[in-house]
Image (cartoon, rainbow, N blue to C red):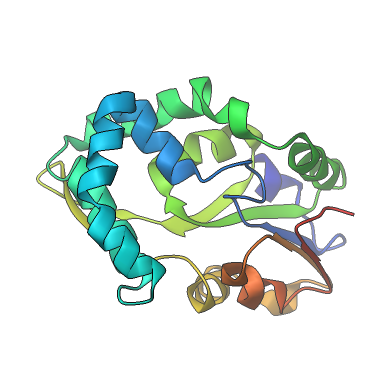
Length: 206
């Protein structure tokens, strides 16, 4: 990948980006579900999921369980190849509409400096990776479990949010390899990632 091959020992700078709300204007989870299922099925699905959403809102169900139940409701049993193709189509047709110009400008600035760039997201690989691959940057994210080429509706990795973001970053690379770390986020779920940066930017890029 471009970001890896351009990264050198002489330029040991790392840039970590949250995805939803940082690179995008809105949550890609809801955008992706609506893209795949259509407006009507999305609406009625959210009505049926309302008790879970309310329970999550008041703290009775954690975010990861609520998200897993939502994804299970809409996608459990779907052929994985079909799911992956929807992700590719989403990145091509819908994602560009919700990307922040300022975020893309900042990513391109890091690319011009040959910094190593990694998107660290709680969202699902299949609707982000086609875009990160096209941009030549890396991705750490939540992954869906697949058995017999079908989605089980469960995660195969912990939800990549909060402390899990930092854990996954440390599993993926050695932070001591970098003399400068930038981190960009927009919610409390990014605080652990922001805490390791020399320059952390919360809800802005300058």
